[in-house]
Length: 549
Image (cartoon, rainbow, N blue to C red):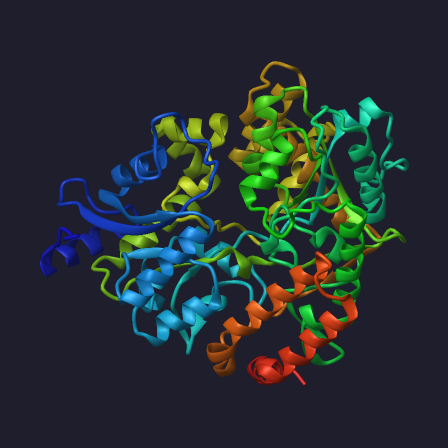
């Protein structure tokens, strides 16, 4: 695809005159090509697409650019298309990548641009302040290689706790009480006991109820995503798929005794029939369909899960209600990882991109505006305001499917909403804090009063009132234990051995859970092979890289 180009003189003039506000509408437009990481339920109005929607139209008008999608894809399809672009040695102007390994590969193949200078010159003060709010290792430095800024990383705040969403209407119908003391914390064993009762009762008469389900990609651990079994692993102090430091040594959590016991527990659930017999083959849409069909009464994920998963259930059944809980062990201890933002991806810019400043200005537009500037944008672009405040269109429909917020934004928002609903602050106070939060609390009130029960309104209520309030609960919870993950860059041995180690782990863990191999024999054999096939060397390299031990 040929891009429109600017003369050097024009480009310099535009950079001087338009650094903060984008390219002047009186000059020739710049075309920016993207690789778009999509989702299966974007909540877009009918007829609108990832390439043609209010977010894109606003960006094109505000910055005087044309945005063209070179490829789009979700889940494995997107990963495949990124791999094809890398293998071909050709990529769009900008695209999202998901791993540090991809970043390192692009860097070593000289395919991506050093953004250090363009970020310093063009990034807004607000965007810089957000990245600067992160502790060392969790902000921009995650995208640094050899002192150069090689990507714009996601920075989604200290991630919300792993949450259990349970069908409250089923609990009511069956006379089941969860959380008797009202502290909003339930044990993982209590959840599983309720799953047994849901299976026995089959509240919606499906004839094929499922107790607990998950997709195979999450059988071990994958960030704070949904439809997984990490609600159990967290409670059991097992942290598979996580690097962390323990007793002065670097640990890959998938190889610990705690992970072995977690797998044993899940294997027992599988044998009992409580764990979905098709867990080895379920995909994201399959698990969502189980809930939509009334076969499955739980979801496990972060606070935003209602907006892109559970809303499908409510759209078909507006009697459905979900209650959100923190998950503990049997002694009431809630375990949580600090920010998992390294799992949220980053945006890289092609070395051949003619206008990298446009990439930073897109980031400014969506992540680098103050509350007052955001309000002004909504007034100028009513369709954008409707997307944000009424339709709750998924933010993957923005040019970059990442999020950039202040480190404590989830907690700060939860505290402000809590104060408002307790009558401690006025709606004007909420708006002064953050204009978007006024819209959120008004939407919650509209649902609670019965004035507006549309799916998007329900999703905001369930996420922001039911689920994200647990961020504040966790912050104040006395029996909370935290671990801080490590986010190493790709090491030399990772380059050659990691793919095989990942495959070994995935295959073994699924076999253990589904009973294809004995827990002890299978796990101990996996650990031995993992160590021998480069795992021990990788641990040593990570330790040296991070200065541990």
